[in-house]
Image (cartoon, rainbow, N blue to C red; front, side, top):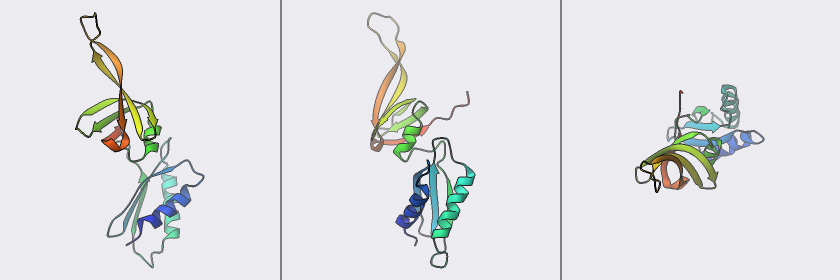
Length: 155
């Protein structure tokens, strides 16, 4: 079986001096290698082909027969690395917390493992009969949520 750390080292070597970042690497027991990369402006197919060829040039098919798939992190898929959170600041996201509560709002800020989502909610204001819609900040920790993902909008 191909060692995931070997594949990771090869990918990180290719990523040097590029604005791409590694999202995930999976190596299955039958040697199917799946590499996901991302970029703030999206991923170009030509770059996936270039990375694929680079990996193939560093791994020997004589030693291990493998299947290789290089692609971008899916747009509607949950975030896997902090850089994805940073790339989506100012965009609409959905967060599912550990208790199973979904929150939809604008990703406002990211600081290390912490992030804040601004949600428009009805808030009862003292002295007023009806609640008003206001932006309320919800703080989360990346490692304490089930998922966070970009909400695709076709408005």
